[in-house]
Image 1: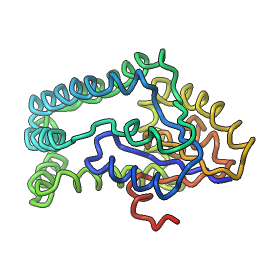
Image 2 (image 1 turned 90 degrees about the horizontal axis):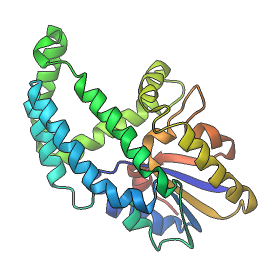
Image 3 (image 1 turned 135 degrees about the vertical axis):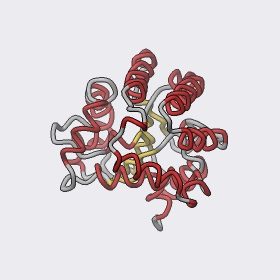
Length: 249
């Protein structure tokens, strides 16, 4: 059985070329793709909405340097939500994992999570002195402002390394997934398993690739992520960047 699970970040500046390269190397028979045609049609306008809200919220709370960095980063992205464009035509079968009617539910869940985080973010002046100094020090590091792409990659790699390994910081896994559980993770992942598992078991020798957000590939004590539901199939799991950097044959 050959099943690769690739964790993506929709705002990856190099995502288009990376995913194209990886799929050309793997030559999958089937690609399982998070979302639906309807989702990808609406995702672009939704992303513009929450980026504006994010920048505004950060500035209101005193995180102006971070807000400027995010604004600079997103203005450079030529292909936000690049996955569908790349996946189409690169396998015999492209399987959308979400139903079209789920689009509004997914976007609503994203709104609740993003707006909830930002609305509850403390003002920088209200933070304990040690934490405030650490944040200000991080924002003043020269390298942080030199390359938005590398900054984003380091952050996402760190999240995956900390929360993607079952033997490290499990309490943080629960904290992170708690925000998603019930909104974006759980029921959807169960649906995805019902789509993926029969195809894998029917023709175990064929190469298949799943392309989805990294949160669905995290280890989870409660077993609600897609990875936990199908790990008995022994999929190869990683970030898009890690697959791109590997010498795939």
